[in-house]
Length: 388
Length: 130
Image (cartoon, each protein chain N blue to C red):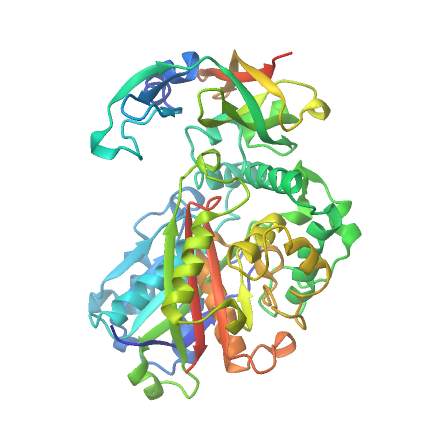
């Protein structure tokens, strides 16, 4: 296999973007990435795009061809492929692009993610997202996504000493980071009281435990490491790509509050990179709900099971902590356009490794990790990236 | 949900007909036609579940999808059936009385309605056993 590098990155501002269409979002992110790589569009060999549900959100399928077309590449007939794994679609699109380059089949490949979620009513978006779980045996019974993660939280709090305040600190910390990120949907800091007094959604999870509905797109360009210097002075090497699956339904898991697919993907990634959790300077984890970040930190090995609430409250996951988590603001504050999230995580880590993360910069960062979850943990993609 | 999509699941939804593997004795609800443990050596047969179980975890849903909005707040739970498998269901009880470890039994109930003129979906919910 060939070594692979990220040579360009781009991302739209995340938010309720009523003035932008699905295809405009994608083109904006793609153009930024191409410009960043100082690349000419005709050099692109292939594209992969992560997208969960354009069919329900904007009634458009056949996304691969659509994005290649509006990227101006229709007459070049490049292969362009949509990748879907619910909220992990972006992470899987990145992985497919890395595999395509590593194999030697392609050289310059775009990995993108896009979701346009605010063109439907809130009830429809809630229902659409339920399709990331088991529609027949979870959704049909009245399960919502907050409800499923609330059941993870309830199980976790029954087994481990996690307090409601510790859980809220995840959102407070992520809003602190998001307030320093110019692409974040919510660039405001919040307090513990903001979380604790917000509307109850699915007990024990409140509105400020939940990531928002978001429009946005992100794109990165990967190439063989030995060609990376043709395009950029600051290539970022892909040290590991890993993916794992588990039962589609939460109720079929070995343990309700451990995402075994996170454990498996994390271990595979560390093995591939020949690194341990101690080598990671910062990690973007999939905090679709506050409890998800708690589980992720533990499942990836950054602390023991049951201790993530304490290390969060102690500031170990803050920007200046032992292992900064979600420097971008995470899904909670930066926003969660589901298909784009996995690519945005790579975007954030590449910015950190290049030293371009502004007020969020982790000094001397050399290795970072991304963790992207589909559903309640039925798919997990983990990547490790390092300064080349 | 179309009529056919609902109709073909009536044995499971109304009567809790699942399956079990006669090779290893493992039970499956919802039914599986392939035993993950025995794989090709497995022998899958129908099995009617007793409908008794224990709450493993739960949440009280305050914000629901449109079809379920009239029910809020309601108790969503994962119940471990006595035969082994765990399922996602609703427990009909005052929300503040739901607890992890509570014993429950199945009841036949309306689950949701496709609008005012659409089909009514029935299925299995649970109530406290004592």
